View 1 (cartoon, rainbow, N blue to C red):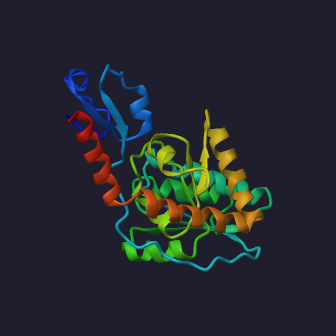
View 2 (cartoon, rainbow, N blue to C red; view 1 turned 120 degrees about the vertical axis):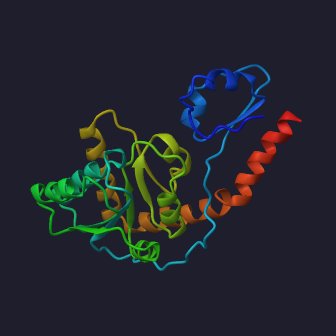
Length: 246
């Protein structure tokens, strides 16, 4: 048996997959694109789990400015520019809120200029790289995590947000598709950058207009982390694959 967590670029990957009795793929997207061979066990299990505590929180059900957060490296793959554009569109369409961005990277100056050009420079705060404890404290008081990344396995950022009861807005692809169920956030399926930012902006407005949805999705995310994303669950999936071969 061989366990594959990602699409291997090596020339022997195809032959290796064919020879396997059981394969665990990192995401359902990878599993759906891989060829299937008779008698072969194919499963999907991400490589991460959340060992920390699920944090109880008190939600503010009253109407208030939406507190949006993003966590990750400031590189093109993470799609932070699209998140800023979506937030700016949300504000232009009558929304009210703030956007805290945690992380650093080569795009930082360009993203700061983007926020200024879009007229939200006073509402977007770039915190840079900070200790994880500071990010966790920020999640405790956030309403929505916007995670516009184009490719992830099982995102640690999303797991932390869900554990802290924060709904997630992300793309409907890669590991995000498997991690974020429809009751704990919103997965955006888009075929263009304009469609992506427009749909994310409308989702932010929905959370802004309906604070009760923030609470409902946040609580569902906590249940999902506790029930499906523990190291015990990861181990059981791998043991199950071994048993299928035996």
